[in-house]
Amino acid sequence: MANQLLKGKKGIIFGALDEKSIAWKTALKCYEEGAQIVLTNAPVALRMGEINKLAEACGNAPVIGADVTNMDDLKKLFEESMNHFGGKIDFVLHSIGMSLNVRKGKHYTELNYEWNAKTLDISAMSLHRVLRTAVGSGCIERLG
Image (cartoon, rainbow, N blue to C red):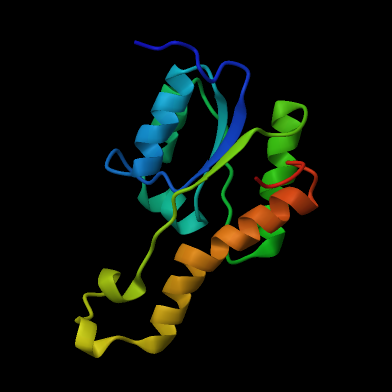
């Protein structure tokens, strides 16, 4: 049962790929609770996943592709989101995790270190880029 706890709140949800994604379930719950959302993922994930199905289930939420390793993509995402919402946002969900070594079936003892660096960049350092861009674009006022 929804209580409209997020009525009037606006947010960007990163990382919904399919129905097994934490971001997918969170997006549905946020929408059920009255939030307006923008969905985003890497362009390759947009082609591989089912995010348009989620967007439809969330009142035709906009889907904006953004590579979290690319500051220009992030800036565009926040600008387009603010245009869509007509102002600032209230929350960001960073639910991004990717490992090239796992995806390519590498055993732990056979890690490709360049791929591992990319994994850390996408899965961890991207949070800093997302927050830096959100604050720098004026999309959110402050952290905390």
